[in-house]
Amino acid sequence: MRRYGKHTDEDDIRSRPNRKGNRPRTHLRPKHEDAAEGMVLTVDRGRLTCLVEDRTVVAMKARELGRKAAVVGDRVAIVGDLSGRKDTLARIVRIAERTSVLRRTADDDDPYERVVVANADQLAVVTALADPEPRPRLIDRCLVAAYDGGLTPLLVLTKSDLAPPDKLLELYGDLDIPYVVTSRAELESGEAADRVREQLEGRVTAFVGHSGVGKTTLVNALVPEERRRTTGQVNAVTGRGRHTTTSALALPLSGADGWVIDTPGVRSFGLAHVDPSRVIHAFPDLEPGTGGCPRACSHDEPDCALDAWVAEGNADPARLYSLRRLLATREHTEGD
Image (cartoon, rainbow, N blue to C red; front, side, top):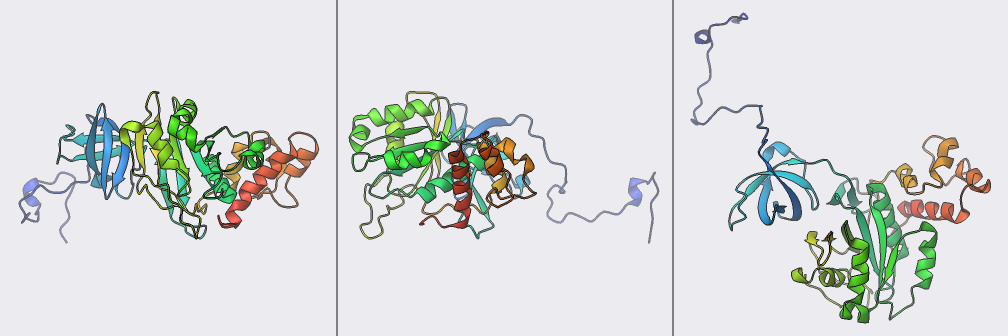
């Protein structure tokens, strides 16, 4: 076999001809230093609609990103045709580091996690007080996902004209979660949207909720310029609504500084991806007491140090109960 030294004459090296006549491939990737910054507004079959300055641009993911996918809320770097004209297509070449991530799995046995929204500050959990009946287990799961992903939760209770909110609010009172209670009449008059808007100003808020609770109707009231198809129908047999939103969409909050991200209605919220040890971070009054816990403590076992921490008066027992109730959601289905 022929060997070459350090000072090889190029004429001595044989190269394979390029039959296609195109440029040879290289492992060196362009840096795209002139790429424009944008925000992903929605994703549809591999096409991503992004906001670049004051216009929307349709883009696709560059091959160099590999398996890394961009989702609604992502801050991205875009190159190519950024005019926003019809039938033009740009390329997303970088995805910025995320400040928060809302994730879910299809169920608790599914190892594949799905990133729903990136870089949201707040998660608004929308639930009806009746028609359909509230599902506390599903609410708990959404709260766990919010705490795990770095989002601040907000409860939005709808249809208070059909049932009082007291019982449900009492269930979450010890978690100190901000909430807004609305009725159908207030939604029609605009009063409900005004009160919810106060909680959204200056933030990026993702809305999540069971189908039929009025989530998209509320989003339409908050962003009347971009009305999404809604339905007030709830199946009389199952007590569940139909999906009216099929893809997540980020919309600028009307009349205030902020963003609203409407997500498809959920019937399950798997937490297979959640590490229970991260949920404790949402309980700053309890977290110091975990110093004496055994390794990999589930915080709901005989040797858990939180029992002694609470018994010594360092935290309210109701807070420990709330923590353990949230952690237990990973062991039950949402329909419980």
